[in-house]
Length: 299
Image (tube, rainbow, N blue to C red):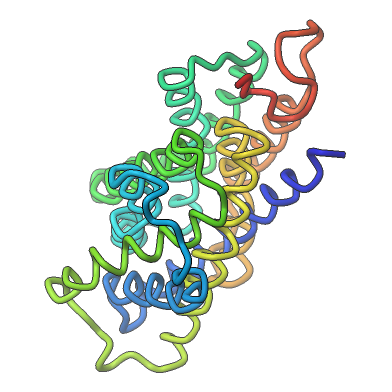
């Protein structure tokens, strides 16, 4: 029973992030520039959590901890993602960013926390990673898309740093929802003037959609769910949840953007589903890990 809420939080993040990739893909092809969407995201989030700023104990953590957690899912992550989405499809972005998270999360957890998981779960992570690659049908690796690939893979590294930083620093969701928008508003607002902007010609409707989804749904609700799930399930398990984003992103993009599913994408969806079920299977040996899903963290 204790794992129901964290699992629901992880599932919520999957669907929110799928919508984020799709809406971001749409947003970067409007009059809005990546810097505009980023600015809307963090200013909206900051205004939303402003009542929490008054009494927040800023001396609780060190500066580097605020920067790691704040920037990991901050403007470096969003700018890299948005420029990558200018080149690649939404489903491909889900593969490169979220499909890499179990691999990067497992590496980070092993290096920083010396965590071990059952052998079949490493195999499941590998299956999910391969299934994500299958979803692209090889088209993602054409030379004209290399820049987009590099941008999105770098974004995946940033997000892994954010998730790992939450556990490393011991931050709760209450810390994350305050720290992320504050750090990014302070650091990115002056940088916004250095990037192209389309605010002058962008319709208010496009601005409102991006502000509400990016700033409230993603940067408040999703961050609460991520921090809560990491605290109770662990970095590797939450990374695994995020790896299912390409599946739901492909489905959402099919419905909202008309990006039809190919046989490769259907095969990838099946592979991801099998990998997730395989990972969730409990190991036979007792004591190898906790009995709950996500027993990857033996802290």
